[in-house]
Length: 413
Image (cartoon, rainbow, N blue to C red):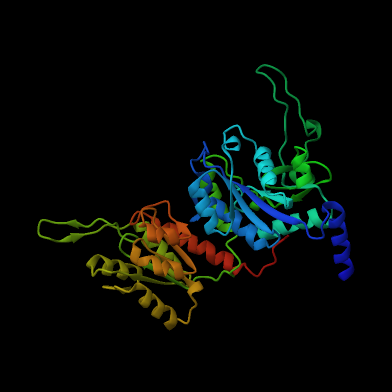
């Protein structure tokens, strides 16, 4: 082992003039996205888009520094919250026509200590630490000057021609059209990351010298470019995204805060003073389905309401009314059931829910939740409270259970 280390250090000494080259991660996150305004910090499955890649980069532990290059104050603030340093790019490289190479070259000029950098795309939320570790290993130990991520596609390509002209195949023989299982397909850049040496960038290249690639499985190859990609990416990231180092546990208790989540924030009064609140049947069905899977479902409410009692009776779950300290109640439920907070799922809408949201292993809120609740929620529903937000959260909990149950299965690297 010591001999191997000496060999690697000698290789680095020859290439970079130092035994331990400085390895930096650089995420480009301009504020002026035209397709999706402030796309880089828009919540994706409850986490700002740039947060997904920063979490993976930091947890990979292969970078000596992790940076976000931006021209926007809000993006800078979010990036710092996730543990990144901020490079304030100049107006010259913040224009619509500015290229990634120009932005990276500016960063390199201001940070001459960097020898190897990984340009991880903010729009690639399914990158995992193991992808970045393998890429960096290839750069340092295998001596590549540049390396990028690819995905295997099975797509037949044809030459583009003007209307009325005859086309021709580019990568197949129509007379011997292969079956998918008989064809290896082609490797296509998936845009997740680009690694390179400083020397190569200074020559005006991102890909050159000894070029390598890392093939990523199709489920991890997500690249968000236009708004229509967003709902597809949310479903993909919930199943294949990297949620952090902490081992996921299957939720065994789900707590629903009634006001603003299970029922609408509005209360209707009749001329006689009778109170009416509305709820969504899909929410009730979602809670029932979770209960049928063995998850203990409970409702917590600050008010005392006949509507909430009727809903609890419909679902067949416990209801705690008139609750002014939700954290204390949920904590007592958790202890009675012998559960860790990681095994608790909680969805709420009000500021009074924020402490429970922070503690719960799986948490969420409706799209119209108050800011304290929304700020701490990893999952933000696309629906309002009382209008299907609970059903969406129940589906999220079910996916989390599936992922936790499969956690011990070996992941292909």
